[in-house]
Image 1 (cartoon, one colour):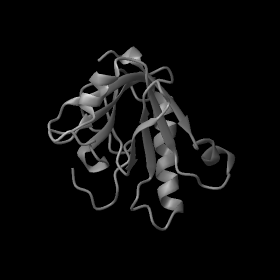
Image 2: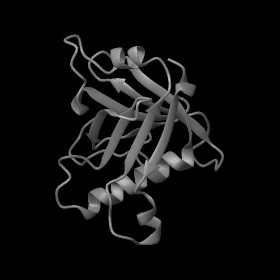
Image 3: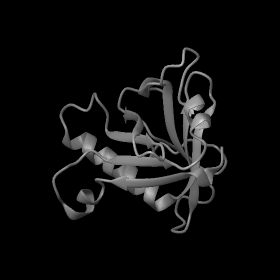
Length: 159
């Protein structure tokens, strides 16, 4: 599936820098392509939508993490099969700001069992196709090495 079929928008992250009240960060991914191909990737062998525990969200840098112009690829994968559900290009700074907001939200809330951030994947008809409450967002360098300090990893989780 083409990366340009997807458009990413984030909400509820400015409160960290502005000192506002904590809000759960939201990443909304709009899909503007053939709906059937996306739905095939978002469902399991029984035709049911993948749930949050069956997906992983990651960011793979295409340059140095300290480069202010660095870019990378955001991906959602099927944890069971390892197949990519979707990929799209994004600026590293924007993704890292989002992860910082999710981390701060987790610190500010006593109960984040339902997730530190939300992912919504929507189709052109503007309906929420799937909604995931997530606690993990992994960041990898250009060589595929996990950058733990930039990733969102819940305490007690071994990778």
